[in-house]
Image (cartoon, rainbow, N blue to C red; front, top):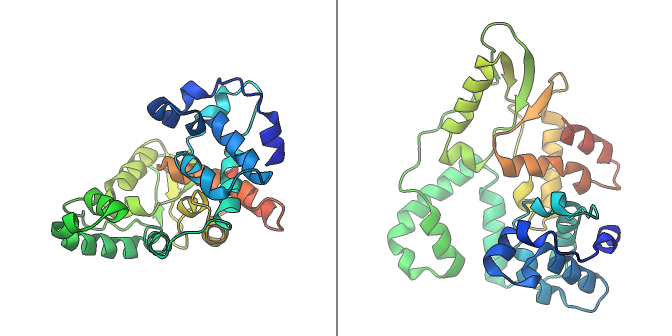
Length: 267
């Protein structure tokens, strides 16, 4: 992290590209401001909790990376910092419970479907809920579409031009399963055979980007063994999932599994 921090020359080119800075207008809600905060925390001049509200607002879009004339890899800074900070944050019991519930439901489609149905039953009582619990109830749809299980293999139409593996995703399978089927149809019509590995799981992005790196690694390891090597590419139709998988090399940096992680990320 130190190298990325030292590269920043505080020019401000990143400010207009940052959605949180554009909306909130605060220096500390910009990439430049967050880099300063991370530096202060790592050097011991600022408490983790003081920087947390501004770091938490970062959506991880990485728009600042391409705007930076100094080549600061903010994308390789924010995720490791969040893992570093999470180990040192003092969260309330309620906050820890909420994060545990999210980590144990969203990455698992069956659990998420059950939780969403349960939440739907509780929606009439959402006025009694407070804070994030109320917000989550309000986000739930009125109804859930029927499950549409994916095949292990979707053949190409006509001559096969390529073969890819599809990351099926988690919440999307429950909330909008038609997106995966539309993806299969588009790829097939272009001569692409699609394998959907049955052993795959969550990409780990939710956990990785919330500082829960060890849990994220567990999901990533499952995918190491699930995706076949005889494909031209691993594809996904969820931007967050794709970004998460691209960070596998960073997640396992310095470990014995780094090479395996980068091999999957680069596909």
